[in-house]
Image (cartoon, rainbow, N blue to C red; front, top):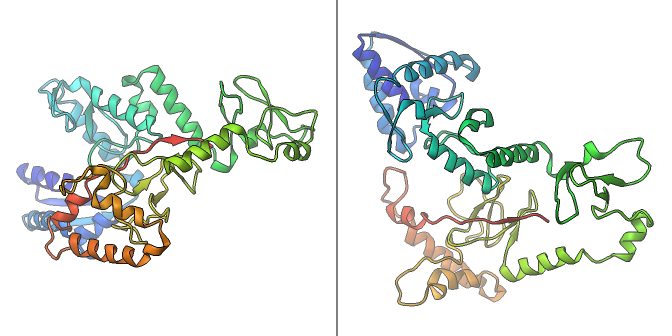
Length: 373
């Protein structure tokens, strides 16, 4: 859309010779007419080609992202220079906002949003344990703390710093203070030292001593082997958590080991670490999948009502999902999968490349809640 708009503006200004510098491989293929075009962007590519035909000279070059930073800088300066002329419409809340209350959320794109929308969006993302990206639909550039700090509270800034620290430490290297009132995140490598003769380490926050190998409060009067022999069962709290997880049918991410709860609806889960899996059978979910590879229905134990005059918990989708844990129902499971395929995959496609029934069925997302083990 931005490329088409740029060509239109150039044409209106009387410019007939254009060179397009592109840093995206897929977009470059569309521009030069190579590769297969996705159905949902065919009309955009056609419109772009019609605009090119109006030019006397055109060329396209594929370049690195760093080589077009000057273009973003010029675009931002041009947009800011219009701030005193008129207000802008925030693309998120659609409120008319003064130019000085709009700002660029990343240095790699020219999307602008109002302060309240950015603040609320960042807060939701940080509370869910994910890194915030640009608010604009389809833009994947990550937001930075530096660019957003002026609209965030001190609490959110500290939360973001903690998230950055957590992401910088590999999962296998993360150590949390075992004392309940602290739980400070530390790196095992940073706490290790060749000069240390014991396994005891001091928490960088509460200064409490703990064993770096057993990850429990210090047991200096016992060796690790002796301690584990006396405490061969898991910690009481961990045992309670695992029992609760089993009762509540929570799932544990195979990548980062966080506990995840499906609040309602879709079985396609995305953990805070980015790992995707099916909540029903726990099989990994690939990026290009539309359904679970094991044949599970998309709808989990949520409140999707099929209007059969039953209570939601007795709906067809819920009942069929319960069959999956029954070994005697494997044949029935395959029949359900076939029914689901025939019901929701028709030959009629909309602009998204999907049929309307599938879009309606897939518009239910799972909410996640996380615990650390």
